[in-house]
Image 1: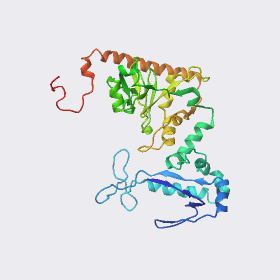
Image 2: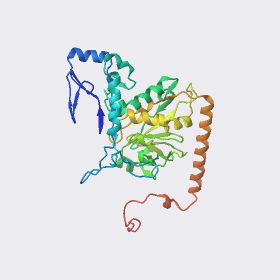
Image 3: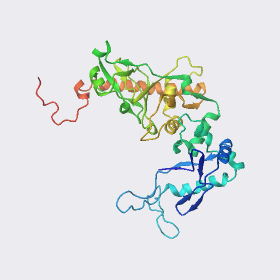
Image 4: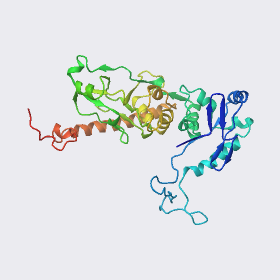
Length: 352
């Protein structure tokens, strides 16, 4: 559920700050064209917030969900010994009241640190999604870009060149495909699929794919709030990426800030990048990252000593992953490492 204080339609604007609240009914006031133009010019303030916990369980009875003590789990009670409902609406009312008190008059609009009309008007998609306009999202974006910062697109490339698996010599080779599901978000690693013939990938996915290489940063295009970023630690030459599921990021060797591939991997897995990717994309279940979203990620300009330290740590970690992979190959046979399809008789069928 999404709460936003201003909804603009052609030649009109509805505002909660100008409205009367009668119970649960909102009575909105329509502005004249002249007043609306003036509001736009003054860059009117916007309050937006995501509501996730409504305080009730879905289903028969819609029973309440109580607040609980974080340590003991005990249900919290109010002064009348009644259960406190665990709902985002409770805090939202207070925060919205504070917003109204700060933006009651036009003179106070500039004191609002949250979103403004310009945050919508200047967006290429005229995006009004609350997750991007929420006060904390706006503050995060401004904080990152207020000081000396680096834009990812200035120090790295997002791979766009593809190969056609139906063309020789690619069509006669076997490949391991990298998809969004190949990324182990918690571990930060990438586990490609088992080797497949080119025609199998074309039939199941698509024919035009990225050629992936060792040390590529692999970014999952969906569910960015889960930090779907992994480092490809594999020196074999049979790796390809599915463009509909992943993006491959490679640092520019001669970037002026000295950013390394290892440091960039660290940044893309940081909260700074995760929040930006989530707020700028379409959200959790209906959004998808684009190359521009990734290239527009900003992060504070690091000191040379920090780049060196993080680079060494990531390189050491990657080296340990390589060693572990080599050891894994000595255990059992190749067939022991092939995914089993969902069939109860797999391996028992007669051979032609």
